[in-house]
Length: 67
Image (cartoon, rainbow, N blue to C red; front, side, top):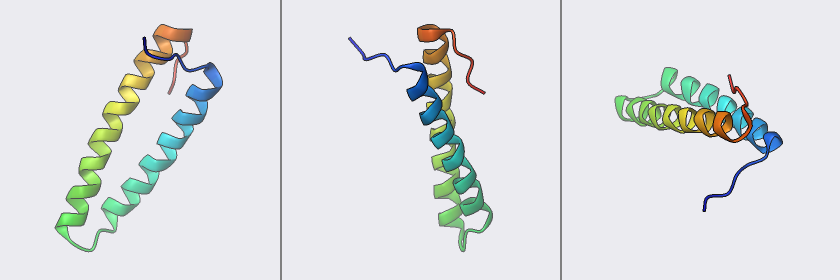
């Protein structure tokens, strides 16, 4: 059975993901070459998937709307 996070943990993780997203956007915008930009873009896509999964889990576990 998967562990359920508490509301505070969801909020901390959500803020960390938002901060990391801003970092990756900066990396993608300032990438020295195309490979670095593609790597940052790939990480942004994965991050977006993680955020979507977190939003669904937070809503199901605690009726919490993460934005």
